[in-house]
Image (cartoon, rainbow, N blue to C red; front, side, top):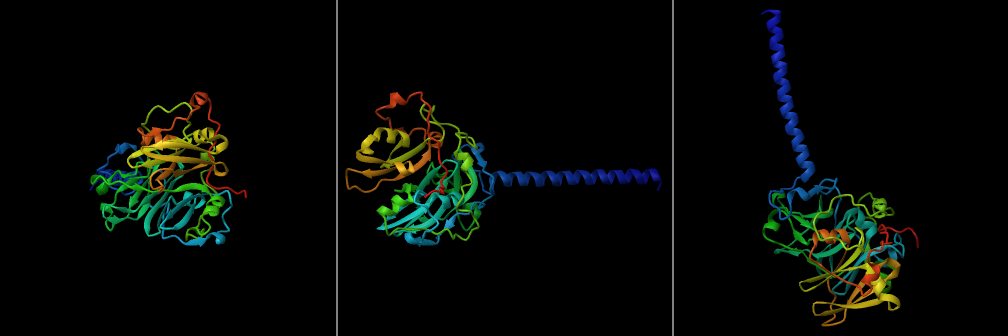
Length: 359
């Protein structure tokens, strides 16, 4: 064989090897991109626009949800400061507090309080806190954090024996948005909760239990990783849809959401504070139920009490305005008596991260 022929054969083999490597590299790269974008979830069926489901960065379970978390008595929780914000619940005569300084790192806690299996959820990007009943569609579900977002809001997933049977659930939409649960039209039942300070919660619930800071994960629960995000009105991820935002609302305007039967109403914390005046509260009606909304100045939050019917607590949740606007475009908005005075004025409120170092 001549030198020329050997050279041509070598060149041909190199070219073929190069094509093969390119094909393998392309397929591998596409696989990585698909995994990165979908975190391994089957998004072939979704009730929200597929292109709006985005990777938040962490992989599936990269933000580790807590399950049956370790608890402390109130007097044992030395890691908490009086001004720290907690999400409090009470079921069956049992009270429990979930500090935001822990939830900000885990975003979900699968727990049981007073015999009720609950999912305590918190999305730092939306400052949204919802508590759900985990009994959905004939099973008690356990939720993890998918690492995916829709409208900048966390998408949870229900852990199943087979990954193909897992579904993604939108916290603020309160419903399954992909997978078998979405095909079945399953929704989450959200429950009464209260966002308040640790001091205020323990004063009214002295026998409360609270999450231990010994979670089994190496996290700095004395620091919020979202401090700079809370300091501005800018978003990190897009939030589409919704109505034209009222001029008095900024993206990160804190809102309180109240549900009575099938009616949902949103209250800006600042509107409640302004209308409450020296009395410290306002009264309003959602459906046939009269409510009292009490402005809690120390934590800049609102507590909701029922004044009619059997006085049972109603479901209450919390969120920034931009997420409510994008995901609940038809929600009724509380119009304060002094609305005309606030029109066109800049909102002076600056959201605070969920960790306080001051006593």
